Length: 328
Image 1: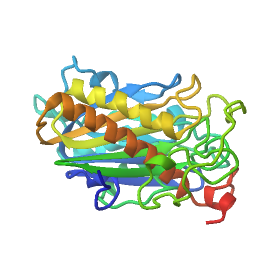
Image 2: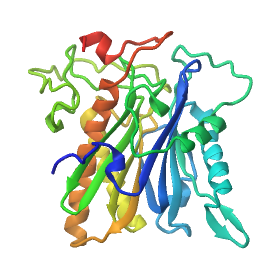
Image 3: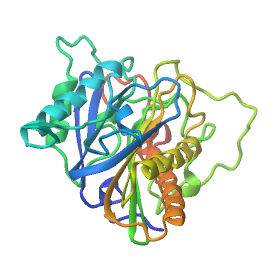
């Protein structure tokens, strides 16, 4: 396995990612859209999720494909970002056909970034606008760190960020996209090393290697309860049923647990979406699904570290960036 050409989730052919943010509010939205509808699934392991249309992603539901997935800041207010995306897709003629109407299917998830130093006294909820702007900006190339849904994210001791990574696994491409807003930490002790260090490729988050020691009896630093949630999308070109895509989302959560200490707490809304474009049929269903889940977990761990590593300072920050603290 090696990272794809861009080391981004958009190494999966047919997918684009767009970001939009409001730096004064310190928040933003990230959209993944396909050139065509794609199979999607979700698995939630955090205790405080905020979602839109995720019930529709169960394998027994009628609609099996979606037009886009949305990750957004803003807590419950941020759910409106998906409405902006749906409106814009409808204007493009996209959506699930019902009679003479088209209904874009746009599931989304939100994180809490309302106490991060930004001005939240908006006269009008900005998220519908941010959703439409993010869709308009969708491209195969995008930045990491303090952008899109990662703009206002915080972890226990640092700024969070938007991260992505990919792997090529034979004929399959796997990628992850994540907004890191964890209750816990992504670095070990007081050093610069990331929990995800064993999975790093080519110094993609500094090349500091693994921490030499760790005291498992030390209390895990966390930020305020209810002020968290890490939300992610894992994508592949493999042809998966919705049930198989759900199992891939379940396996991907291992990557979150390896990169965030602690994760999946009662105060996080941690979840993973799966997006499967279906371009590459499975060759050996059971074995391939196992390998895809493993690769997805590796991608998510790396994407989490990359998101925090690439965060950059901004006026009014209440937490330092990784680069502020460790000087690179």
